[in-house]
Amino acid sequence: MRALILNVDLAGAVPIYQQIRDQIVEAIAHGELVDGSSLPPTRTLAADFGINFHTVNKAYDLLRQEGLIRLNRKTGAVVTAAAGDQGPTAEWTARARTLLAEAVARGIPADDVLQTCRTLLDSFGATQQEDMP
Image 1 (cartoon, rainbow, N blue to C red):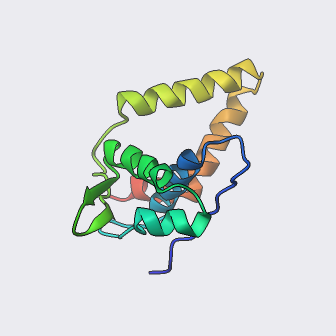
Image 2 (spheres, helix red, strand yellow):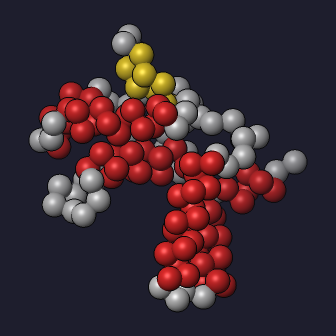
C-alpha cells in the first residue's frame, strides 16, 4: 500500500482538523486506506505540518466517534472499515441535509445536485459495490 498523502491549507477557511478528517475519510472511500491501515502518530503528523498535535488529536477523535478508526495506545490510530450494511446515521443525514439546503439556497437545480452526487459516488467506486450480488 502506498503512503497516505495529506494536503493541508494552513491559511484556509476550513479548520485544519476538519481538513485532516475529511481527507482521511476520502482516502477510506477511495480504498487508499482499508480496514487495519495504520494512520501516522498524532505527534508525527503534527510535526510534518508544523501544527499543534492537539489539532491532529481532534481530527482523529472525530474519526473515532464516527466509527471510522479505533485508537489504541499500543497500535495507535487504525482504520476500522464500516460495515456495508449500515445505513446513514442521523448525524450524516443532518450534514447531508445542510449541504442540500445550501444547494437549494444557491439556486442549484436538483438535477445538477443529483448528477454531482452520482459523479462523486462513482469516483469512490460506490456504484460498483452496490451493483455486485
